[in-house]
Image (cartoon, rainbow, N blue to C red; front, side, top):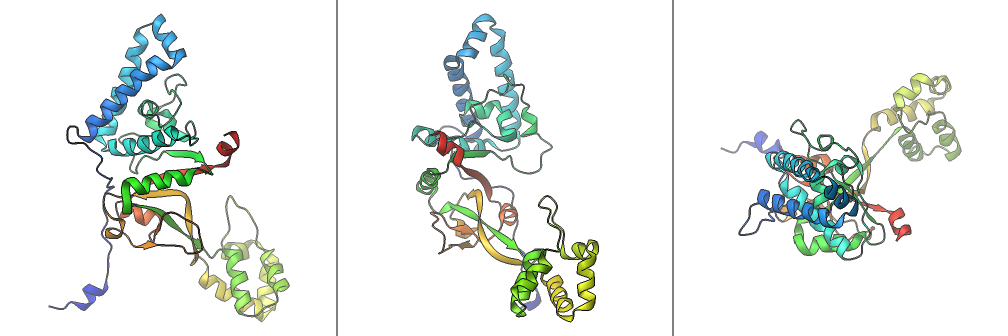
Length: 313
C-alpha cells in the first residue's frame, strides 16, 4: 500500500478565491453590501453640493443613480465579490477616520458607483461618464483589483489595523528577482574570476530596453561584437555557455511593493510564510508569489505607498 512514486509527486491543491467571513448574525454578505451602498448613496445626496443642486432641479437624476447602483450590486453579488468590496471599504474608512491620507481613486475601480458609495473612491462615476464594466463584468476571469494609494509614512498604521482585525490571516507577498541577461553575466563572470572591467564591457554590449528586455540569446543574435568575442575568446565562450544555462533562474527574494493577502483562516494552514530578518516589515510574507498565492485561494489587496500624498499632507 506504500505508493512511493505517488507520495513523491506533490501537487499543490488549488482553490477558488476565499475571503474572510465578515457577516453579522442578522445579515448575509450581499445584504450588507446593498444596505451599506444605499446608505452611502443617500449620504452623497445630502453632502455632495453639486449633486444636491442637480437633484433639486431634476428629481429624475436620483433614478439614474439608483438604477446604476442596483445594476452594479447585481453583478457584484452574482460574481460573489460583495465581501471584497466591504473589506476594502472597511480599511479605507478606518484610514480616513484616523487622518491617514488616502488617494481619491486610481484605475478602472473609479468607474464603480458602489465604490463611491462605500467611500472606497472619491469620484462620482456618473458625473464623469465612467464605465463600471471596465472594472468588473461577468466575463472577467480574475478577481477585481482596487489600487488604493496611502500616505507613504502612515501606511504601516493600516497594516497594524489589519493585523489587529484579522490576526494571523494577513501577510505581504514574496517576489523573486530573476537572473536576467546582464545580471547573469556579472554573477557568472565573478564566479569564474574574470576581471570586473572585462565583464562590464561585455554587459554593455547587451542592448538595454526596459520596455522590452532582450534575453541573452536574443542579444547575441543582434550584436555582432558579442558574436565575435564568443568565437575568438574561450573565456567569453565559457562565460556565455554557463550564463545561457542559468538565465531565468530565481536569484533573490524581495517583498511585493503593494500586495497584501487576507485569508479566511490562519495563513499557515494555506501557504508557507517567510520573515525577512533584514527588512523592517510588520507582516510576514507568503513563500508563494502572487500567482501561486492566488491559485491557493488567497485574495490580493493593493496598498500603494504614495509619497505625493505624504507631501500634500
